[in-house]
Amino acid sequence: MQTLTDTGDNLVKGISARYGLSYDAVVHMLIAVNHGGGSMAQFNCPELGGSGQWMRGGMTMVGDMFNNGLKNTVDNLCNELANLLSANQVFPVIPAGTPGSAQWWPTDLGSPFSSGAQNNIRYAVFPNRLAVELNGQITIYDTLDHQISGVSQQQGSETSLTFNSQWGNISVNSLPLISQPTDTIIQSEQQNFAQATQAPIEQPVNNPASDQQAQQTQQIEPQKAVNNIINTQGNVLPFSVAETLEIIEKLAHLKELGALSESEFNTKKTELLQRI
View 1 (tube, rainbow, N blue to C red):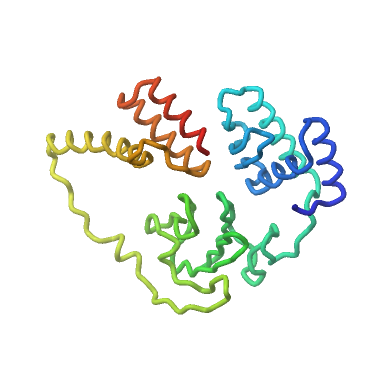
View 2 (view 1 turned 120 degrees about the vertical axis):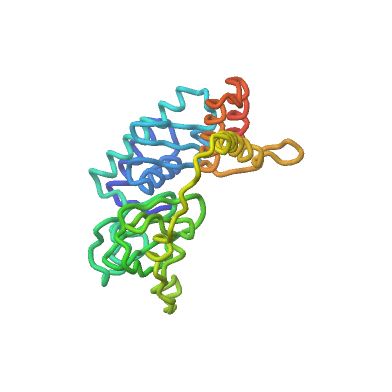
């Protein structure tokens, strides 16, 4: 169980009584909202319908997708917890430079000019350095001559983290390592990413038949992605909440293309949500 300050403990007890939830359930949601920076939360709380996702001012998803009362409860609870976190010292202060603290990166890196978090990964960008924390383990990368302007992540580990620079999209695992979680120093050969991205690009010939074929391929690819979530027995394979939401987005795209009817879309969406 996550340790709380005396103030946090008293606030959680009050919220628990008002919402008719257990103390542990409220702490679980508090941690989820805190990990989401007060703007989102991914949770798995049996008292609130199991797995779900909350976004402040946006979508709230719960296991029982048609239970609007439960959605409102989760939305109100998460909003209250987000406000609580912004106005109170709920968790004990962890020393700077320690995993789990607000300033989790090594202190010798100084202050980052950009930092953020996505899912279970936190990152901070410094001059010529990128720090990534995954499950409390910190890895430092050399950003070479890249001027990082944005970071994105697909489902998985830090190897799926990519960022934008003046040379385009670059995968984090292509950068030289400065230190790994074991503090082992690894020497990596410098790579000139500019040469790779500045290679001559062949201009495509304007071919109406090819254009039509490309449009058909764009419609087929989402269908393949959806088919891949069904095994040979016709059962939906297990996925995390984030993966399920990604699949639902692909189903919605298929519906917009006319590949799925409204009833087929709703049936598949219900099946996916029931297996979170």
